Length: 250
Length: 84
Image (tube, rainbow over all chains, first blue to last red):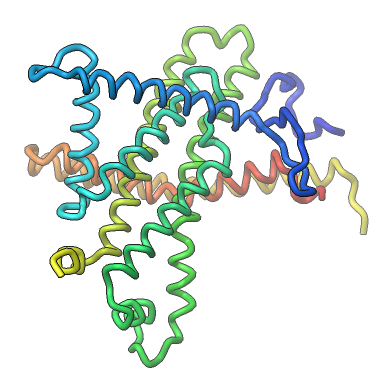
C-alpha cells in the first residue's frame, strides 16, 4: 500500500526532498539533502557572478560597455526599487535587500536549470522570514521609545489595560511565518505542477512545457521575490517610523 | 475503532480536495483587485507602472490564504499525517 494515493503511472513523479548523505551530529541523525546541493550550486553561481561583476566594475570605464552595463543596470534597478519604498531609510538597506532579492530570484528560477529550487524547502524560506523578523524588531527597539512600543502593542485599548497585548504579539509572530510560507508554497506548487506534467504525460511533454516553465518558474518566481522584498522593506520602514531621521541627527 | 490504511488514505484525498476549495477566495479577491487596477489605469494611464506594482503586491498578499489551503492539501497527500 505504499502507492495508495499515487496514480498508476506515477512512479516517475518526484517532488520530495531526498536525503543523500547521513551523518551524526551531537547524537542527532542529520541528512545532507538535494536542497543543500542545489543551494550550493546557486551560491557558487552567485559567487562567480559577483567576482566577475566586481572585476568589471574595478576595470570600469566612464562610458560603460559590455558586462559593466549589465551590472550597473542591475544595481540601479534594485536601488531604485528600494528608494521608492523606503524613502530616506533606503541607504542602509541597499546591501541587505539587494542580496536577498538576487538570492531568492536565482533560487526561484533555478528550476529552469533542472534543479529542485532551494526555496521549495521550508528550511530555506523560514530563515529568510526570521531574518526579516529580527530586522523589524531590532529597528523597532532602536528607533522608537519603549513607552511608544508598549502603547502600540496594546493598541486598540489604552496602555494601562493590556488585554489586547497577546493578540498583537501573535500578529507579530505571524509575520515571518506568513512571509516564509507564501514564498515556500508558491515555489513548491510550481515544482509540483512541473513534476506532474513531466511525470504523467511522458513523451507527450516535449517542447510545449517551456511555456509552463515561463509561468511557474520565471513569472511566479519573480513576483514572489518582488513581494518578499517589498513586504520586508515595508515592515522595516514601519518599524523605523518617524524616529529614523531624528535619531540619526542626535 | 481501527481503520485500515486505504480508508485513511482515501479520506485524506477527500480532505485534500476540500482544502483547495480555499482557492475560491483569493480568485475572487485577485479578480476584484485586477478589475480596479484596470479602471485606475483607464482613469490615469500615466501611473500605469505604479498601479501595476501595487496591484501585484496586493494580489500576492491576498493569495496567501489560498496557499494555506494548498499547503494543507499537500501535507495531507504527501506527508500523510493521519497515518502516523
